[in-house]
Length: 637
Image (cartoon, rainbow, N blue to C red; front, side, top):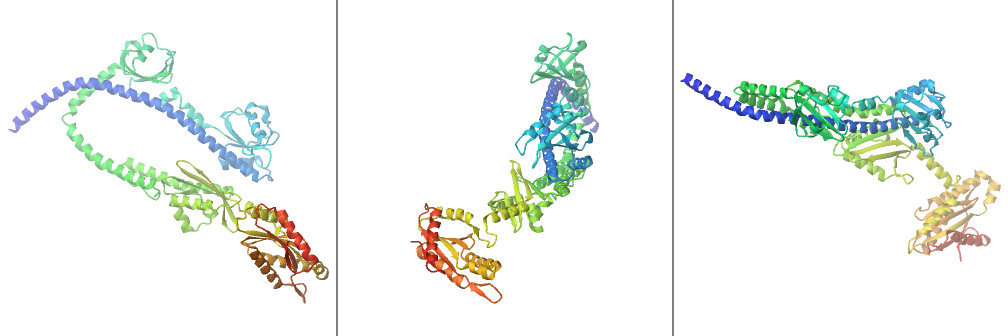
């Protein structure tokens, strides 16, 4: 029974196999042709896609490198502008070039001559002598502080060597700082965009040929076999190639039947061809292999592949996807470890190495900044990512405690909110300058894109302290610390102009009584102490109501503002005179004196009244009281 079952099973299965082979032969012929068409169409599309990608890559690379070259040129100019008093010989210039990772660094003076260079033989070159160098004279002649020129790669004037130069204007003096690079990457990228190079790297099957034909002239522009001529009369012609967009059999070279597929791309046809006998061989081979494997492979392969794919591929891919999702969300400490085969291990190691490189990028940038000696910090974060890339200088410049810094660096949204809060409290002088501590100011410059945000932090404490010092000296009396009279009038005029309805303000003129006698009897040091004592009483009054200044010598003035009625002004004047009476000024080791001053005041409720007229009225009141009785104040009538 077992033998009969085997016999009939063998006959039935064999008949079924031959029947399937017959239909398979018909179907396979059509399938092979369509497969070859799809293969050729895919290859021609890959050729077109590669050409487009190479062109896009070249354009992006040029733009990226131009930006990078400009940044390095500005960095070189920054360093050289900070070292104007140092004579830079060629070795030092070469050190700067190595530090900036450029090939050449040149300094061009205001006359257009190279006066310092990392290449000693270039020193003394007149930029006006050659078309290549003459272009940078436009930067020299420009009035813009940030003028620059990025020159395309071309032979340089000195050695006819292909170079790319970038020049930027110097700050603080007339001149140009120029950096040069050998554009190796750009030249290689341009080479990769030629048909010859593309076809030399593009894989082709046995007997297969790829070629590009000019649609207007019929000239072969590129061929995988290196041919560069028009097709002969017995070869396929342009009209035939135009009719093979959906694939066609035609006579090729030496009368061989060829299967050709062409694709239109701009002004050319990208074509792929293969001998018809190869397709016939594939048909026979396919039918024969189907016969061999039909009985044994189907179930075994499906089951085996299902097992292998599930255990060896799918599970590993899912694990990698989960870990990559964690990394994308900012968990850069995640380590991918997928075993089972060498490829997954290599992929895991590659991803881990890439993540490690990304994490260490900020450290490398920090090291470069530390080498330069510039108090600079930089940060970057991507939208939708948690991790913030920062240089070491950020923590120091912002004076962040260690724990707070770690917390902010791991949460991009929190870091963004922190930076924007700082900028909301920027100084009045400059909107991007923030006061970190009593004597520390930093400038925060942020550049936002769709992808995220890039920021640079620089220490501007010295500039801000110097600016505030100069501002203070220009507006304050050096002896008493009160406002100078000129600045007082500007502030008082602004207060008067902005006075709200229902309030009044008053100008008060003051003159110290018998001040000349104090100077004559006790000396000018005692007189200065007397003036400073009077000023201290003025400064002790509430700043929300009093604006004080020294007019000249022993003359002073005040503005009392934001009062509701005249009696309130009188109240503040009484309080001021009461404080004067309580102020004892030592004039010598044995004598001291209460401060005595005469004053006159004038008040107004009209914000349109001139501050000069108001001060004049107060001055007249002061004049009247000085003629009558000193040591008191009177109101202008």
